[in-house]
Length: 322
Image (cartoon, rainbow, N blue to C red; front, top):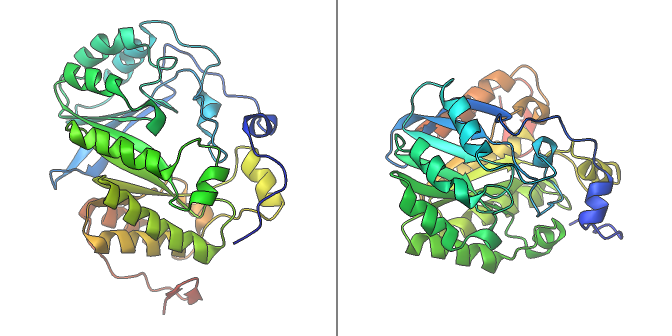
């Protein structure tokens, strides 16, 4: 494993390398869309995803770029329901919804608890409601919100990596025990959970990145999650660019993402998805990228293994293509 940088990568250092935030309107979500997902029911169904505008997350993780679309102050009461209303009026009807707020749904400085009832009312048509939250903020607020909504609640948690030293360096201010306890709390109260897992976070070689992504999937399922989402780590938030320039980070290969997804699917312990957003930046061969992206999309939707893509690019990473 690479040596860690000598500088302390704390909140102050991370913020010092940021670019200006994007202009956002607290009355509008900064993005919204509908996409297909293999649901817990075993069916492929449409999911509405709303990216809510709210106050920046207090946990300034080393690799995060979600702060770019946040406010500096808490949004006003009523702003979040207004955003949800705006998006739902412009999206087709779905059975499932994700409310992603660039941080923690149960952070009282992000989503005002006094808006819970209005939010719950808007969510009445949905069978599943998925929100995101840091383990340190998973508490009785989850139960209060669970009791307000008609559908099944699921919480997405950024586990990132099961490597304890690297996890500590990511400035997440959480431990593996924090994650395990949070998932246990959710399971005990009938709330599903999913884990976000980084493929090759900083301070890892390509081989280490693959190894630890697999071990992190194992850890997440052992803890009791029902779903894992593997996200290739990327630069672009300032801090990661500094680490990349210093030789402490390089983006993972598409080969590695394929290997980790294939591993997770073969386990058969729960749903495993590969994040294929902006997948082209991880590919070295322009000839096979479209076919390989389609393969990953198909595996995501079927949760079944598929043959590798043959390409004249030949031997790359851990995959041999002919």
